[in-house]
Amino acid sequence: MMKKTVTLIYLLFLTCIIGAQDISFKASAPASVARGNQFRLIYTVNAQPSSFKNPSFTPFDVLMGPSTSSSTSISIVNGQMSQNISYTYTFILSASKEGKFTIPPAEIVVKGKSYKSNPISIEVTKGNVTATTNNTNSQNQGNGDNLSQPANVSNDDIFIRVNVSKTSVYQGEQLVAAIYIYTRLNIAGFENMKFPNFNGFWSEDLENPTQISLHQEYVNGKLYNVGLLKKVLLSPERSGKLVISPAQATVVVQQRVQKQQRSIFDDFFGSYQNVTKNLTSPEVTIHVKELPGTKPLAFSGGVGSFNLESHIDKTNLKMNEAFNYTLKLSGTGNLKLVDIPKPKFPNDFEVYEPKITNAYNNKGNGSIGSKIVSYLVIPRHYGDYTIPGFDFSYFDLKSQTFKTIHINEVSIAVSKDSTQSANAVISEFAKKDVNILGSDIRYIKKDVGTLTENNHFIFGDLLFELAFPFFLLILLLLLFLRRKQIKERSNILAMRNRKANKVATKRLSMAYKCIKNNNDSNFYEEINKALWGYLSDKLIIPVSELTRESAIEKLKEKNIDETLITELNETLDQCEYARYAPSAVSFKNTDIYAKASKIIRSLESLI
Image 1: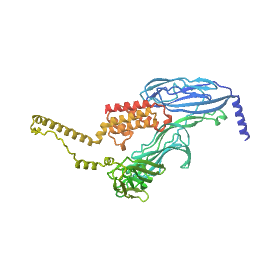
Image 2 (image 1 turned 135 degrees about the vertical axis):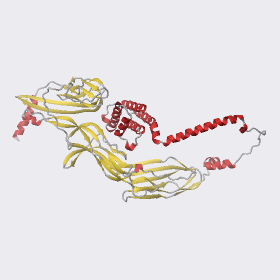
Image 3 (image 1 turned 45 degrees about the vertical axis):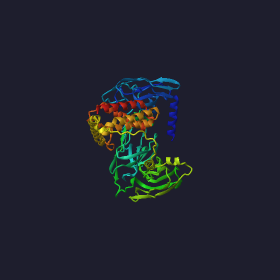
Image 4 (image 1 turned 180 degrees about the horizontal axis):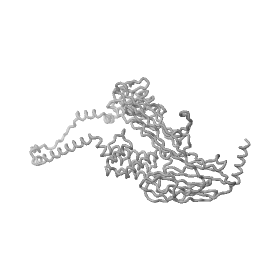
């Protein structure tokens, strides 16, 4: 105990007598990088700054940063005391075009005085250049720190998993997929993240946190910090084995690097260095079973536990008086995907478009709540009417059988409105009544004019004989064009191929409207749909089989230039990054719009 007290007093004494040191503010980065590659730009200062101002990184794209770290050490060599303080600011950049560029100095303020770093010159080349910070740009050499190389990050120290609530489900049954990161290290940030595409599933995001909250959990006897990256509600669209592709992420972790020991105090101090680690989760296989037995005619895809009720606010009313007919579907299951049957209203009823109210919550095991469809109906003629009953069928998960709910018929008594004039009543007649009146009533003409006999017939006219072959030829031409049109429309894939550019252009115009309305989240979603939709239609790849690998393989088969494929990959990555990490986006949405438009125009001219 006495020994520890003396050590602490000695350390306090050292911090008091260490004098001020010269401020050193250095920048380091690779001298050359390949276009499209990521690299680190690190600013290091040997004092604690009160403020830091980064320069303009144009034409480089900022993917992440700044992430900060600090370290402090005290050493005694031959009776001479020295203190090493290091603050670092790390940026992850990406080179988007070739050439030689200079990044201006950054600026810091230490104790009220301003300092600038050295400028950085970087050459962006075509080839694959391995970026290393230990090169001619590094201005932080010779500081006497002799740090050892960090050890490799173990797969047991940090990994990601896709956890599912069920691995065996019926077609249409809901399950939840949650993507978690497990770590025993300090995470400094994420450089890249790619979530599964959930092919074969209908999906809806439940949670997509902007900040990761960690909780502790034991895995295989080891304690990990666990953070949720994304949670998705899934519903399989077909039976068989469906594979959830791996989630991928590149994380930056802080790893302690021990200095070469030069005094007894070096055991108390060390440095931390940022190390990247590529993580890939295992594939997850979901076994989807077909619904057993014969599907009822009234089955519309509902899987779960449901109850359907009908309600009408009036059954006795006057003509032209409105009433509401409401259907309420409640329970647990795939509520959003279920179609409630539409009642067959009498022809003399004017029915407006229904109002649909979704009042359900997506929970851990699926959707629970209700879906309400309300019809506004106006009888246009008096009389007694009946709204027929109908059946609604769904697959019950508890009993694993189909169940049918019957909605009873409703009788409506519509009386004549005596306050309306006869003209008003006639104007509200149904179309069939108007037709009967038009055939029964003829007005008497008192003055028919002069009657003359007309012996002229068009069939014997010379003009008719000359025009007949001409009109016959036009008729044959129209029949030929119509047959050709029917044949073309029968080939759905060919039609999708021809209309791919038109559909993509509409998506791009919607994305441009999002730019004007400053709606970034919808902008990147529309750009993503425009690119993926164009690839699916133009390359004739079904949506269920559309992946980035399949699309690139098709493009290569069509001899598309590698540069254009790379640019397509970059744009898709940027859209995904912007959708799932919007707070770290530094590139402009106008640039993404221009790149997406250019890619689609180029592919349209080449394919």
